[in-house]
Amino acid sequence: MMVDIKLYGQQTSTYEYVKLMLQRHIGSSGIILNIEEVNDWESIVRDKVQSLPMVLVNGEESIDYSQSANIHSFINNVTLKVLRAENYGQVDKIVVPTDFSDTATNALVYAKGLNGKLEGIIQLVHVYKPGTQIDTGSESKRQEMFDNYLLKINQSWAHSSDGMLPIDGDFRTGFVVEELEEICAQGVANQQLIVIGSTGASGALKRIFGSVSTEIARSIKNPIVVVPPHATYQGIRTIVYALNNLADDRKVLPKVLDFCERMSADLRLVHVSNEQSYPIEELKSETLSHQPTMSVSYDTISGSNIASSLDDYASRHTADLITVVPQSKGIFQDLLRQSVTKDMVIGSSTPLLILHP
Image (cartoon, rainbow, N blue to C red; front, side, top):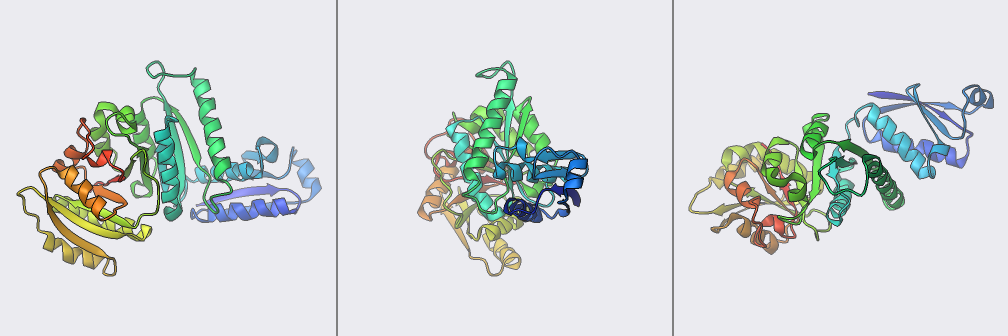
């Protein structure tokens, strides 16, 4: 993967800063950036450059400084052009659907925290559904609202997020479910994470996905993080994984261990016993073979309500994340039943990570 760019400008401190930041941002994606520097006035005039600095991407798309609000915005615009040219390269992508609500904004802030460890790129997505949703105006006005929101977020985070890639934006018209599926289909599944806010039955998960919430979680094979409204990212130090089906757990465990390693987190494997046994000893040796140095504990607890028992267990052990598998019918159906109450994990303060085998 290689992208050619021409960087027009005089070798001032601003010019050198632009070059440095582009190399830093693009370097983390695995994309080779071939920079041709054009500093002589004869070439600048000949190529009809309107303002400096200016960048030409792959000999086609030009971005000049006059099109940007400030130097940080200019660098962000160029960075995103290059990343899109190669489908973001090898960088992880965190997809965050938004409806501009406080719940969605909280999920975006949480995603930013996760990205501090994952070192990927956040893609903010808004899907406009004409004719059926309460709106403040036409599609063009909604597009303008989204663009302004995205610009404000990038500007406010520019100085507080050293080295973080700018947030990319994707405005679409259609149905949220189908559009998210299309976005996920465009990339590598294990390099994309969906982060969405939830306030229980009336929250973003229910409002955006409606009555097909379980269908979405099953059909989109990417990992999904559901963020409660008051959850704040304080680092991921302890992850609880809910054991339920040995065949599924064996497939998912390597993903869980990899995520724990990237988060520098301890792992607690727990089975909620409802008169059903689980061969937890069989899983111990397999876990050790994957990550022999990781801190992993194994517990079996009793409880007739799986979600309530997991929530209590997570609270006792100050867990930062609870992980479940959709195909594990008992857990998943219990977690996502429509009459969400305070004893259910989705209504608790602990974020939920949904992984597929």
